[in-house]
Length: 311
Image (cartoon, rainbow, N blue to C red; front, side, top):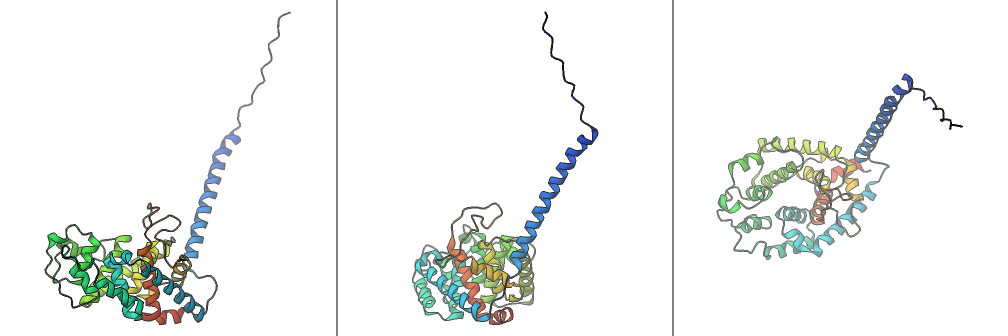
């Protein structure tokens, strides 16, 4: 008897309702993912900008004093980390002037005798001497001698001795432009202007540019929640520009919360550094001096800010 072929089982075609359900489900998942992303961003922005709980003036002072003392001790352990960076040395010199801390005074004395200033092969060292002696002699430094220096160093040298340091006209125009830069470079620009005003005095035009840059940098601070070197830098430079009114209490608290046990601050935040796609850079010296400078300014230059935010 011939084998009987198995009967085929008919498959019902997908209904139009089933076909429309799949893209609807995908849209639902996409909307849920978007809602979770927006909720997460809202949480991070709120966490970054609004203080949680209360703290007395005495509690804040004790915490900030302890953090500052630990930071200074860390800076003193390896002086070369700071001494090789003139921008950082400007911050330390200002800290010493405000606080009259004998440890920092000794540190600056050592800097005066260091190879970073006493180097006949580097004419720009004469400029950095003015960080510790505003009347130090500076010879004429022509544009070609500054060519290999970074833009930031050219700005800083010019800011300290504009009558002695020649830089390209475009560099000077960029330094004083309120709209030339965005994001990180704008921080360096503001520091250059802070130094220029310190050594040469202010003008209404200069003050207006610094006010504008400070406002833009403070605006960025609202949105960048990563406590990296740039995070500390924003608060510090806005304070140094004379605008404690733009600094949120929460930003200072997050800086304190992220200090390391050894007194330093990390350049990166969980491996996420200054730039959006910059990771795994180890350079705690820069961030640490900036954090210490901010705390010194709040303690000695802007105690009214502390009084206003802590009772």
